[in-house]
Length: 120
Ligand SMILES: [Zn+2]
Image (tube, rainbow, N blue to C red; front, side):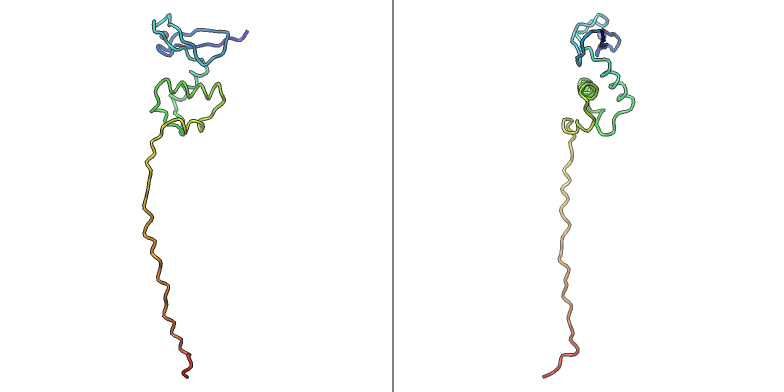
């Protein structure tokens, strides 16, 4: 029977093994005593990988720990990619409303000097 390891998100030091595969379990950690969230080991591995080298397309550093776990959980267990999170993560984009530079019509009136206008 396949088992899944879950690690305490509080002390990151205690691992539990369960026979079911969920994103996390909430249980009192026997190690640190916190009622903590035990995070799926695969998710945690992804989390640690991102901690080492944050994904370029995501503002990783600005996420809280739980948000990070959530992102990793979706990537690892739901097959999402970083691109899927661009909407959820609040990137405060400055709207760059640059006024369109004055669009002046170029004078296109050339004086046509018809030299050869026959005089009547
Ligand atoms: Zn713990």
